[in-house]
Image (cartoon, rainbow, N blue to C red; front, side, top):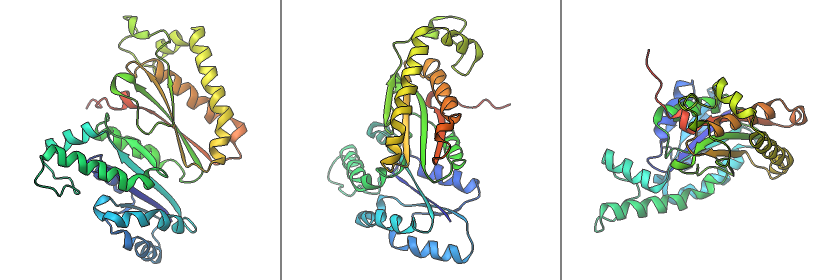
Length: 296
């Protein structure tokens, strides 16, 4: 059975993620007590269920500490994937303020709402850290709900075994993705933004590709990043990781980083050196994926 555990910081989009799993045909259970997880899987097995998504969060308190060992036990007979949703504290405070919801760990009414909320978020981070360390982490600070749904849909195309390498483009002006394991700063490369013809385009467009591929610095940067990842990827696999996020950042996340992520993804997908390894590759463009899709 494919078991997907959805967890993370309150306000980071777990409900959106769970609905994406449900839309994809998964049996979904929200806010399940930790102690019932193994019983649930046993019951679903008897019903010949093949795919399930379960949301568990910090409302379960200290019982969360039992989850890593429970998941380890389930992995003996099932494919288990943990998806951890995260966001920076300022974004979470803003979201709770807009929705006027109370954080599930906010209990001290004597302090100001803002102070209590920040303390609750910090407490929640500490409780969930053991899960985050073994999960596929998604930072939703700078992405809207439709982008998160799209990223979950892409994740579901991936096999929940082996190492999944995520190549992600981003703009430094909106911050570095918190889930990034490796970050490459490509702001030193010539910027197509200063060409009036190329400015409204992206690294996905042919004119931008043709502009960048002719620049020696871009070619050398791509070669150096590729060589680094190619050399160290076997070591990350040997370390037993499930996910490795490689973030490529330029100023706005529109041209240079998008181009390089596409190039890296294309290169590693075509490498026969890794054909005998359980490797999966995903590519994301944080800033581009956040643009609302125009309705026809």
